Structure formats: C-alpha cells, structure tokens
Image (cartoon, rainbow, N blue to C red; front, side, top):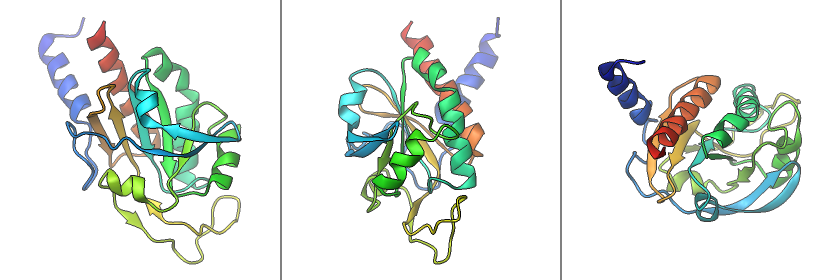
Length: 195
C-alpha cells in the first residue's frame, strides 16, 4: 500500500509530466486532426476524433522514422502496446515523414511492428497546431539506413488526450524509452481513476 502523501506526489508528477518547451499545455482542447497514416504497411485515413470515442489516445510526435531515438521509441511503444491497450488507451505516432516512409516504418518488426499507426504530417501543420516547434530539413542528414532525410522535424513530445478531447498530460524532455514509460504511467493513472 502506497502512503497517501506519496500517492499524491506521484500523481502530481505523472499528471504534469515534463512539459515540452512550448507545447500545448495540459487542460487545452486537443486539435482534432485527420491525416494519412500507416498501420502494418497499409495506408488509411486516421481521425483523432474517431479514435477518442474508444478511449484515451497517446499522440506522440517524433523527429523522423529510421533515426536512433525514434527507432527506440517506436520499438518501446510496440513492445508496450498491450499494456496501453489494457489501460484502455491507443497510440498514434506523428512525424513529418512521407506516407511512403511510414508504410515501411509501421510494418518494420524492429520498430512499430504493426502494433500502432503512424501519421504523416508532411507540412508540419499538425505539430504546429499542438504548438510544437518544427525545424526545416538539415542538408546531408542521413537516417539509420543511409537514406537522406529530406523532411522537417517536430520536437519529441507526447500528449495524452482524454476522450473529451482535452490534453491531460504533456511529456517532453525525456529520453525515448522514458517518454514511453511516462505515457504508460499517465494512462494507467487515468484507468485507475475510471475504475
């Protein structure tokens, strides 16, 4: 049994998480975006509003598919996807990658492994609607496969969105695996509050 005071401190840490520099704050209405997305190599139209009808959604922005930290984060989300589902939450990754890159990344058994969708925000408008910084492509930057990265990048930030369309928590400034662990702690807290 966790003492009441410790539970309160842990709850405050989880609810506040570690905010990203200029991200949309907790309590804000989340932009109800729609985007081309990929799941297990197949493209489809993703709707945040539709997904929220089923429960909380973890919307995680990442700089680029096939880069070190993003590979680790996608792999960790894939490994923990059953834990998120058990807490009643779904996951969607969002980046400025093209849908073609995301079709490959979403199916790659080393990364997304067909466990959750990845949405293409090619012009950065979704990231900007969440008040995230979007940087231009860096000339000569290569991914882990040796291919050029020709798209912009959004900062690594995760939002936990509740079914009422509100931002419950903002998670930024953490290493990729820690970002996933924090998101899972938040959705488990939400699940506990519902039961």
